[in-house]
Picture 1 (spheres, rainbow, N blue to C red):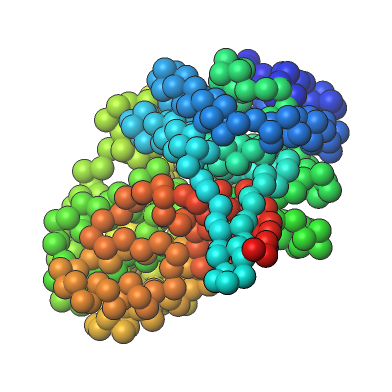
Picture 2 (picture 1 turned 30 degrees about the vertical axis):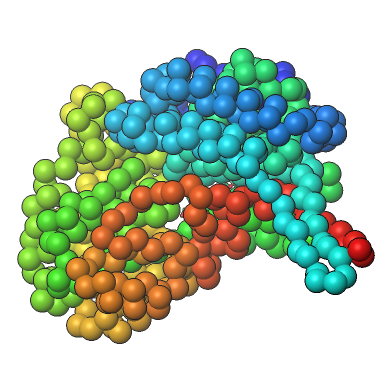
Length: 480
Ligand code: NDP
C-alpha cells in the first residue's frame, strides 16, 4: 500500500511519531493508501525549513521565480493524466473533470503567477511642490497555506503560486481526505529544481498538523480555504498574534432565475451549478430561486435533465457525477436530506443513497437531489450541506428574489438568469455576494478578486489581491 510522506526541506520525511492515517478511495469505500498523522514536531520541522530557506528565496530575482513556476506548470502538464487519475481516485470526482478541469487549472494557476511575479508593481504617489512617496512591497516571510478536499490540487496551487511568486516560503497542509496530488507535487518541486525548504508539504489532521504551524511566531501569514466553522477556530487562534490572514469560507449560493431567461441555457447550466463535482464546489448554487411564471416549466425540464445525468464510477469517462468524498460527508448529506423531510420538504429527485453495480457497490454515492417546499429559514436553505442537494423556491418580484438570496449568513457567489440587462445590473448591485455571474457560471478570469462577504470569508484572493496579501507594503516619503 502506498505510503505518502511529508516533503520538508526538500526531503521525503516519515512522520516523527511514526503514526499514519488511512486514505480512502471513496468510490470503492476502501483504504488504498496511508498518510502521515503529522503533529507539532513535524510542523516545527516544516516551519524551520521554511524559515531557513526564506532569506535566499526572498532575494531571488523575479525572473528566477517566474522560470521555476513556469517549469512546474510544464511538468504538471506533462504528467496531467497521472495527476488526474490520482485526483479522481482520492476525491471521487469524475475523471473527465480532473482531466479537463482540476489539473489544467492547477497548471494555469502556476503559470498565471509566474507572470504575476514578473509584472506585479508597487505604487508611487507624487506630492506637487513637495516630493514623492514610493511604496516597497516585500515578501511577508514564511507563510502557511491550508487547503480543502473539494478541489485539492487546484486550490493548493491557487495559494502556493502567488505566495512563492511574491518571494515567500511556504508550509502547505492539504486536506487529510485528499492528500495524494499535493504529495506528488513534491516530486514536481524536486524535478523543477525549487530550492530545498521553499515549499514544504505536511500531511495530517488540521488541528494537529496545521494549527501548530499557524500559531508559530515564525509564520507571518495564513491563507485558508475551508469551512466557516474551521475558519472561525483558526481566526480565534491567530487574531491575538496579528499575523495576516486570508479566509475563503463556505457558501449557500443562490441561482436567481427570472421568467425572461433563456430557459434551455438556464437549465443546462443549473445542472452544472448544482451537481458538478457532486455539488462540492464552493461556487455551486444550492438554492434555486425561480420566478413564479417559469417555475413549473423550469422544474419539469430540470428534473428531466437530472434523470439523464450519468452518476457512478468516477473512472468511467462518461460519468458526470461521481462519489461523495468520504463516509462522514456522505452521512452528513443524508442527515440533511432527513432534516429537509422533517421540516416539510418534498423530495422531487434523488434523496437517497445510490449503489452502482460492480466494483463501486460499496462506494459513497448519492442520487442528485432536488427538494421543494422549504421555507427560506429551513436548515437546508440556511446551512451549507456541500452537497448533491439543491432546493427550489419561487419568487414573485426581483425585490423578493434579492431578499431571499441575501437571507443567509453567507455571501460567496450567486448567478442571475435574465435577458433584461437593467434587471441584471440592479439585482447584481443589491446582492451581498463577492462573486456574481449573469447568464453564465464558473467563468473565471484569474485577475479578478475572488472571495466572499459575510461568513463566506475575510479578504480576497486572485490577481493582484493575492500578490498584495503575500507582500508587506512599506511607504517611503522623500522631500524634493
Ligand atoms: P474544513 O474546514 O473541514 O477543512 C479545510 C482544511 O482545514 C483542511 O486541510 C483541514 O484539515 C484543515 N483544518 C481542519 N481543522 C483545522 C484546525 N482546527 N486548524 C487548522 N486547520 C484545520 O473544510 P473542508 O475540507 O471540509 O472543505 C469544504 C469547505 O471548504 C466548504 O465549506 C466549502 O464551502 C469551503 N470552500 C470554500 C472555498 C472558497 O473559495 N470560499 C473554495 C472551496 C471550498 P483536515 O483534513 O484535518 O480536515
